Structure formats: C-alpha cells, structure tokens
Length: 232
Image (cartoon, rainbow, N blue to C red; front, side):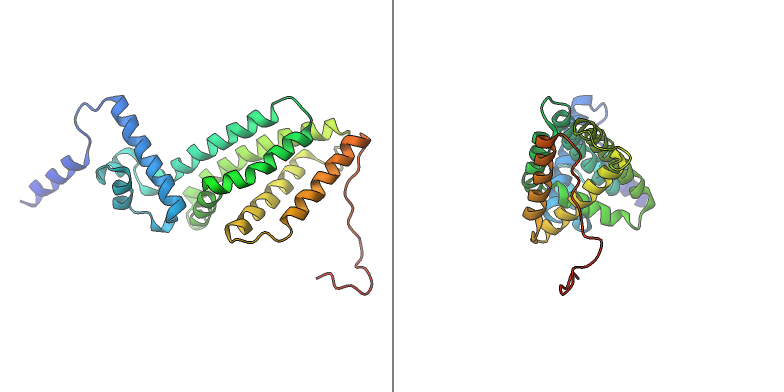
C-alpha cells in the first residue's frame, strides 16, 4: 500500500508524459517569476517549495523536477535578473558619447534598480551563500561579470581623460566603484542615505573638471588630521 501511495505521489508531481518544450518553458518561467516575487517580498529564508508552487500556480513537485532544489531555482532567478541588468550596462557603456554622461545615466539607475528589487535579491542570496560554498561559486561568477563590464568601461574612461594608468588601474577603480555602489545600495535598503548625494556630487564635479581640463585631476584627501577637528 505504501509503495502504491509513493508511486501515485511521484506521478502527480511529475509533468504529463510527452510534455512539449513550449509547455516546459512556460512552467519554468512561471517558477522563475514566482521566485523573483517571493525573494523581493519575503526574502530567501521565507521561500519554500510549496510557497513557490502556490505563487507559480504549479504543482509543488515540479520545483525539484525542473530545478533539482529550491536553491537552484533561486540562483537561476538571480542569474536571469542579473543578465538583464548586465545587458543594459553593456549597451550603456558601449554607446557613443562622453563617459560623464554614461556615468550619470548609470547612477540614475540606482532608484530604478531599488524599485525593481534586484539589490534586495542580491543581498538575500549573498547572505545565504556565506554558509553554502556551492552558492558562493555562482555568486562569484556574477560578480566577475559585473567587474569585467565596469572594468572595461573605466579603462576607456581612463584613456579618454588621459589619466595615468599606473596611478588609476582600471581593475582597482572597478573594485572601488563596485564596493561603494554595493555599500550604498545596502544602506538604501535600510532606508539610510546620509552622504550619498554629496558623494555623487563630488564624483560628478571631478568628472566635470576632467572634461573641462582634459588633464588628470584626482580628488585629494588630507594626509594628516586637521588640528582642532575630530575626524572620527
């Protein structure tokens, strides 16, 4: 009797025999869309197989049939979303025009990306991956793709502005920009934005100076603390 029940359960959880590629694609996309909504709304810790199935309007057994695990479904959801944004960035930095205009457009995407929920998805899965090596590897791949796109764009900017490439290595600049951008987004997810507008303004003013002078004009920071001022 137990074997009959188990066999019936498996039959119900698997798709119909002869499932067409179009039906499979439709079902897979339904799960990816559902996972995207749940990651943004509930967070990774709140996503279960049955919850995904309810959100997608599908049988819960199909999660493992199509993806193998909930983690794999969440990763593919992030990869799909990231691919869309990466394509947007490639198109932006590959377009004609001065770097400063591309930079302004890219920084203007901050609000759009926050509204889309992508930074929250990224933060949720990044935290999940800290204790799961198999997840970390996939997130490193996404990070590497972002670093390459930004590094190539900054290499062109460094050449465009005639900056000393030994003082401004593109790889180092890309790491710096990604770190400040990720930190900024994490703070925004907390509802904290103190200093963000001032940072954007300072970078923009430096780029304006490079546009007008056509020579290196790196922002400087004091080597020692000013007397009589607490700089902590």
